[in-house]
Length: 291
Image (spheres, one colour):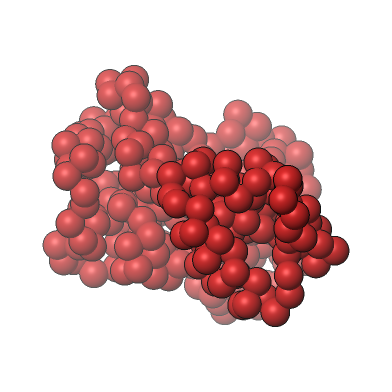
């Protein structure tokens, strides 16, 4: 069913006349009449009752009217959205779920202050989700973990993992904590943690199985629960909070490199300058500012 036939139909409904509808559509009346006849043939029903003065909707036409309006409304909305996206000075940025919100906020606030008018469409995801979206051209850039040294990404900063404890915890002043020291502590599990299996193995190798009191995919919430003394957890070094202390664990030394993953395709010309500025700003930002 062609969309122009729906427009013809709605024009007749709005004007109450084939002649006026043809004028509104900038076509001849025979062309409009033929279009309405074609639409009726496709639907298998008459949509209008015609008389010399005015046309009226049939029962079938009355039922079809809200559907026709809804279809054209959705088409118009989709067209407007595409137009806004194509014309907007907007970068699509994917962010690894385990990168602290504060780290991303400092980056974007600094860039937007230096480049007003640039908009970001943000997407949170796992490593694989971000890579998939980059490959499918659903993202322009991504902040994620660098596993391979190649030209698809630029390293920004490297960090390790430490235990996060409430500032009031009995071990808050320790210089280093053994796995055995946590045998009676409640553990918060960060389900999106990329070293979750290594963390579990670190404790089981020491015959320590701390009770699990909370499991969450939201790292900021996990950090808040640590500060509230609900439990302890292992987090990347860049996670900080006033009521939380970070202490290394003996024999636990995994590290990660957070990188800026570059576009997998040529960006539209309208975004080229903005994209280049963002990449340069991001690299400089992390080379001079602490995470």
